[in-house]
Structures are given as structure tokens and as C-alpha cells.
Length: 262
Image (tube, rainbow, N blue to C red; front, side, top):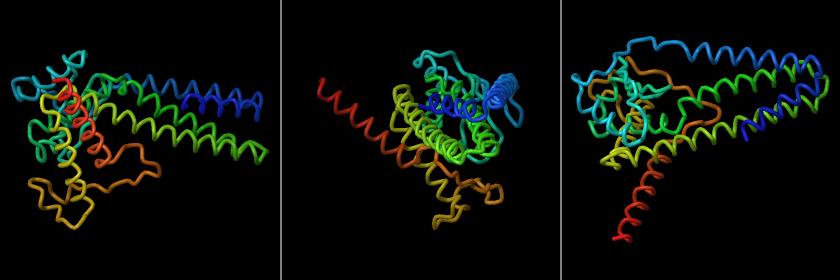
């Protein structure tokens, strides 16, 4: 669906603007492709520390075992000097912030790492950057068509196609998050730890948003370092509640299946 909408938007540019549309489309594609490969070659920068086995053997060995189960190489793991709890992955690398160690226990941190291993296993760390740059391509096509076309219907069609792309992209990204959770559950010795980690992180987010609880109630997390939250127009990430519900269904479904087999 995503690829189809991009192709349609490009064809619309060529049909509406003829030779100019073709030239702009090829130039935009070449520029974005060049940027993608240039950025993909950049090394990680910032307050990152490479995880060493002797420093946190429980984390290093736990990630190594889950990577083995997933059938992938041991990912590179960095600890980010940031007291906001967050985790992300790119290429064959996982980043875990110090903030996670403030609000989660060891099993829960391993569960968060399992989710990121799920993204690597499922190819998301290669796919997501492509989606990000294809979005820039869609924005370029839409802006060019709206500005340069003399046809109102062409401009309207361009905007509609862009809206379709954004909705399809959001749904696709949500599905990939659910799939990463499903993969993580298969890798964890304690699958329920993923649900507990999400509950803890949800509670922390509620504290940050001031949902009737003082932020200072969380040990070692200072209100002064809290960051302003951006509210996206279209959600590309499922809520904690959605993920927790899916995990419960997955775990209970697996337990029911196992009981029937016995």
C-alpha cells in the first residue's frame, strides 16, 4: 500500500507537470537516496558507552542468549547517559538509557531489550529509515504539485494521496511494534516481564504528563530534566494500553494452547 501510494504520487507529478515533473521526481529521488546512504554510514555520536560483559554480565549475557534464540548475531549495545527512560535500535545496535535502570528491574530491562531485538530480527531497523526518507519524498511530490500545478483537481488528488500515505504509514508502524512485542515474548524466559515493563513505563509517562501524581515521586528522576512532549498529528506508535492488551491476549492464548496439548 505504501509503495503503491508513492508510485501514484510520482506518476501524478509526471502526468501533471510532464517533463518538469519527471525531472523533479528523479532529482528528489536521487537526493533522498543519497541522503539515506550518507546518514546510514554515520557513526553514533553522543553520551554513549559501549556495554561490556564484565560491567553488567546479566544484561550482556541475557541479550546474547536472546539474540541466539532469535537467530541473529549479538547486537552492539550502548548505554545512553540520559535519565529519561528510553530504548531504541538501529542497524544491529540497541541503545538503552540510564533512565531505564532507574524505573525497571533486571527482568523488565531484558524485556525492553527483547523488544528491540524483535525489531532487528524482523528487519525493522533497516526498513524504518527507508520509510522515513520515503515520507520526505511524498512531502516533496505533494508540495511541488500543489505549488506548480494549474489544476485544482490535481492539487486535491496530491493532498489526498499524501493523507492516504500518512495513514498507511501509521498503521504499518503500529503493526511492526506489535510484531516486535510478539517476537520478544518468544525470546523471554519470563514473558510477563514485558507487560510489567510497559506498565512501569506507562506509569512514568503519566507522572511526566502530570496525571494527578507528582513527578518527584519517581526516585532519582528530577523534574528539571523533564522534556516537553510532542503530540503527533497521526499516532505512529501504539499506546501502552494497546500493547499491554495484546500481550495479555498473546500470553493467555499460548497458555490455553499449551494446556490443551497436555
